[in-house]
Amino acid sequence: MWNHEVSADTEAPLEAVWAQYVDLSGWPKWNPGTQKIELKGAFATGSEGVITSAAYGDVPFKLASVVDKESFVIESPVNEDVVLRTSCHVAALPSGGARITHRMELEGPGSEQMGATLGEDLSKNLAAGAQALVEAAA
Image (cartoon, rainbow, N blue to C red; front, side):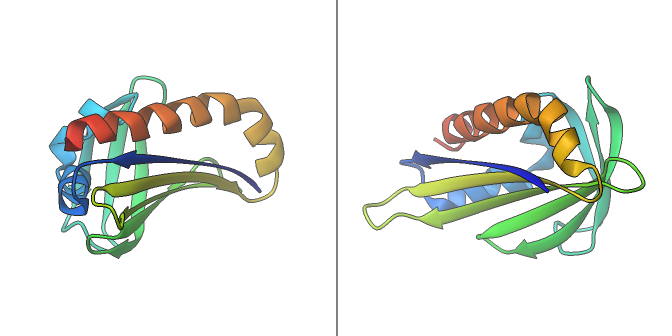
C-alpha cells in the first residue's frame, strides 16, 4: 500500500470548510485538476458519481463513508487490482478555525510500485488542494 497525507490550518470555521466539500460545483476551485464532479444522489455514504479531470478523463467513484461535518472517503478503481482512496477530514481547532487533513492511499497488488510512479503527482495535488481549500473557505 502507498499513502500520503497533508494537513492545513485555516481561520475559517469547520462549517465553512464542510460547505466547500458538499458544494460539488465548487470543487474545481480548490481541487487541482478537477474539471467537474457529478454525484448521483445525496452527499452520503454509498452514493456514486464521476470526477472529470484533464489528466485522467472521467473517473467513477463511490462515497465509501460520510460523517456529516467531519469526514468523507472517496474510493475510485485505478485498475482491476488497485483502489485509490481519498480521505478528507476537518476538525475544529481549540483556538478557533479548523484543521483540514487530506490523505490518499493506493491499495491492492502493485499499489506500492504504482505509488512510486504516480505518488509525486498525487502528493503535489493533495498539498495544493488543501491550501486552495483554506483559501476557498475563508
